[in-house]
Image (tube, rainbow, N blue to C red; front, side):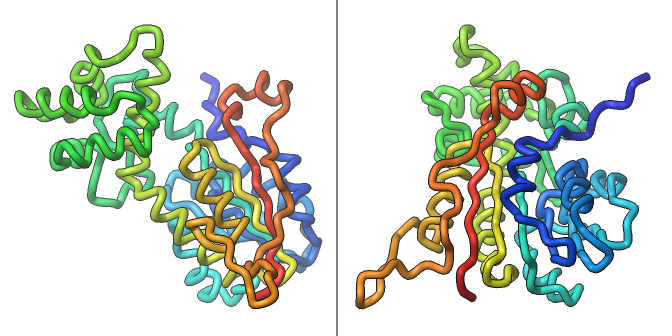
Length: 304
């Protein structure tokens, strides 16, 4: 039987080009996953180069690179500064983060990330974390459900979906993906079924894993980790995370507020390398349809 592909990295050559890899440099793959980006980075390094791959999912450890330049770090990328200090490599020449969910998570049914198979409603990236998607659904009030479905899922009509979930859980606990689908099926537009279900599952996944808070902490830590002239390259997949990355690279803060000094000069430690995001070619989307929503943004640190 053919082994499923763990992940196909999006925008691979574009991301590698953006990092301007030096053979003796230090680089961080903040979302290691299947290791596709890391293998490409490692291929550009010499004997003195170093590469750190971060991932909070222990499954990813099996993909660790067998090369002395590589170190696997079992951690959420929000703690990037702490771990780089721990390894005595707190100044890096480049950081890459591919924020997408690995094929592995969607294709491994028992993880509960996909609506295509009936499975426990889990969705934890870090399987040692305590709260699952089922726990959140059981505990969330109506306002919380409406909020995350609208903000994290981009659902146009989050209210009836939230009400349907609450009505269903009052009759019996929602513990599986199949039970969740049964709860919301009457609220779904048949013409938009796959899209709307994907939006619901995305919203729950982002909430369960605290993805937006983790991304904010990661971005704020990058200026502490990179050396001046180092590059930050981030691949996003939905509007919320893309907006946060865009604001941060433009202004140096999450809110996107551009501050200026007494002389009217923009006060930000970052120089934008990509004014507009780099997106996949038609050929890449044909080879890898899941890359279609990917956007690559790149910035360079100009000062500590």
